Length: 148
Image (cartoon, rainbow, N blue to C red):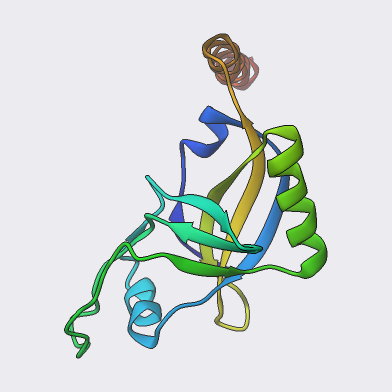
């Protein structure tokens, strides 16, 4: 599994409860560009339209040898999710106020592009502070244990 793009702020900004791996509909030149690690999930989000999930604002750079004249690097891309997972995700969004967050994009063992999405709820400011304190404490604890 080769990770292409990672959303570092996802776990900091959201309390993620469920993670699902889904497929992504891409053109051939986009896949070649992803093999060169030229993408970003920094500002990406997932939205639901008419019973389908779409990845929005995900940047994939244009492949240099491509002949696409009207290439849009941040176009909307369809996510391929099983019907059971789709119903679970859409129900959680509408009823419980959750958000679908893209976590990472990777190539699986068969060479297909997959994306990990998480079902999460936004953290408050004090939650972020608490998680930062816990992270700092774990780092200092590891240092203390290493020195002893």
